[in-house]
Length: 149
Image (cartoon, rainbow, N blue to C red; front, side):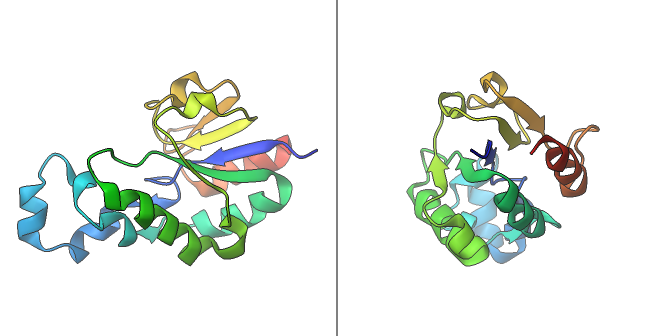
């Protein structure tokens, strides 16, 4: 049986800031301090460099799922995240999206996440803290996980 790997979306697979130029400035200003509540914003984001290639490789080595949190005050985020997974991950992401505000409730071996919020810090497996000096990018994460597969 393959080990279970969860990967967060925002600022891990997806470049959150890449959507900003695609949103009208008045909408950005109206949502200052809560940009994750901009309707439709999650459908406008690009993948982070190396994320799609890493996901493709790791999906062969692990039983891989996308584990993300969708803002409670932005109902379109739920469907936008699904659309993003379908668009960029295709069949590798089919029925592999889990949206939860309590990531620690999911059982698995590894979680790649850039934050410790929403239960990531309490995840029972290994939390690979993306964007930190130990795991600054997808290359370092992939090298580490190859050896752990």
